[in-house]
Image (tube, rainbow over all chains, first blue to last red; front, side, top):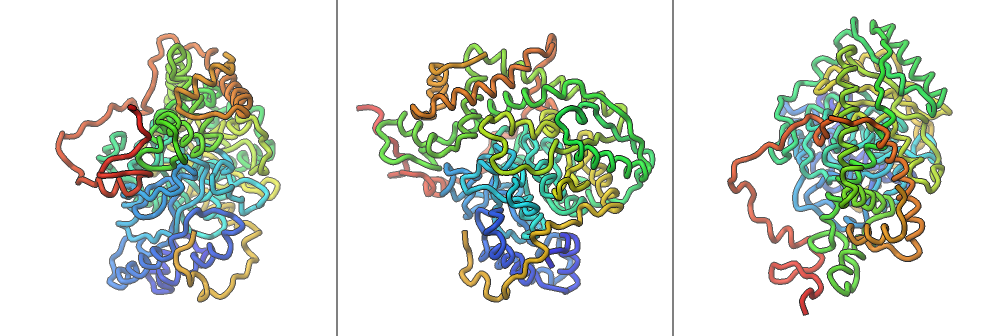
Length: 501
Length: 95
């Protein structure tokens, strides 16, 4: 059952091939027996999942249910879940049990989806390797000595290891697309404002955007239909109708013009990754598309602009964690300042503290114009590059990441080496454009992602373009070798203890 | 721009994050590494470029000034580190 896509599982539930309770047991059993290696879940909600599955089976028996009714999935541990610990990968929120649900969580609950648990992530979504999680790194199911990418590494690894058919994720500088690429799955970051940020723990509010991950574009379209909504609780949410993203999946690509930015194929790109991307572009030509060379001249400034804007916003957002109202509090504070300083020093990990300090510096008196204002001006230049490009082309394509998954610890102690892994994904967040990563090859037996960047609100077209590629290729169907030959114990003995961490 | 020990101490105060003596040098070095990266921005010509805070240049939507949420004080206090009589407890501030 775990090798079926979300769409296939939905059909199986409706045809009576299996029940939601059987399906949920199957995935919980896999998590129980396999996730000790991958560490992709922080919290497994077995008892609740089985209750949701039983309720879904009753709905399914009546017929006429939403397509996600009874289908198991997982939420990144950044989305608040009422009554279920939401850690954001941080010691600061290790015991935080939210009193409310994120809008995204509500949307999936209303559709009858079954939530298996909360997935691991870089602390406060700050990282590209999942090494900053308080709960330990996630292992890449393709090669467990390698990182799964980040920050949504738990969601990506869990899907790749067939522990869940789908998961939610978030993307501030590449945190959906980069782990999707490194784990060989499909992920989409929508246009800024398409998915509600209410109840999604904030990192950099003008860049953060939730989006779905699954094995293929068809499943991602199904998920986005439920995930995207107008939400008056999020003042930056778009007041635009949500189209049916599955309706146009099969549209023909004749006449499509694909822009290929020269700056995404320069120094630093692994030649084998480049070859895989070029092969994918040839496939698109076979499908009727025309390739056009374009230029995004300010691309080289996207990483520097991001590392002013994101830390500045983070330093403001994370000031709420003060050890007073919720979250970690140090023992025996001597005075109020000691309470703040020690609670934050103990509650946050090194990368989070580094970004808060950088942000505080960029916003401090005397430096605001030189750093923050300058970065916001460069941000507009980067956006204008894209606006000009989309006058000539329908979609932009290139590599998602310069390299396939790298080994744990291989980036050393210089934070900038890690930051450069997001060199092709960050500009999309700065411009607020939708982006996707789909599998397009293997390098050193590890997956490589093709990045698609669409125009504003063009998610449906982007999904159509991804889906047509996936009908011609089978990269998205490959499973990590480590999971294909595992034999599991009898399912009936699993989860006798109900909910487990 | 290179920052030094005194700058880090000032930042630690601004950000209310304690930094231990043994971590000051490593913290200073890693922040300088990030600042060297972001200094590349200074080369960009941004004359007459309007700063962009929202990617869609959207302004914040306003809602009617009416009560929309129920009082959830007890729920919120349940997750606080220390409370009494409906108040959040912190160390004594005024002697």
